[in-house]
Image 1: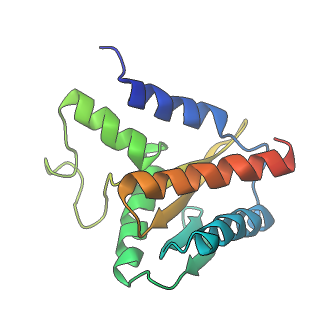
Image 2: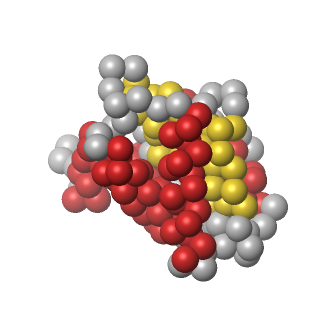
Image 3: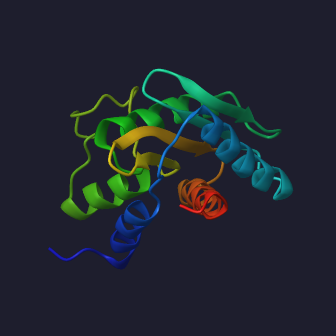
Length: 158
């Protein structure tokens, strides 16, 4: 089966957007960069960067609702489990005709494949965390994260 152009694009993003290293300071700087862009664009979003058991950055902007907390928790759980962005997972499962959440494989209350969460992948170490945005459409949440990571990696010369 050949990948759709969208699935190819999502795979390329994950190959391209790899960190040389990632620590608490990087999480703060990346999260702040995404937050500043969201503020300038007047996006009512929540932004979260986490490792498996610890939140490294959290920002909730005006217009975001308490519902975003649940979306973030479920999106990031999917990324940390599968080590791929929720946008890629959604496209990949759809192309295969599967729905792990809808089909009962994954608990709907714990996981979602809605776009907007992206793995923090460190060269030589693998996935160490997730960057998640919630409050826009799935595609727009995803794009805000991807643009933020891409711009951050340019500033650190990765």
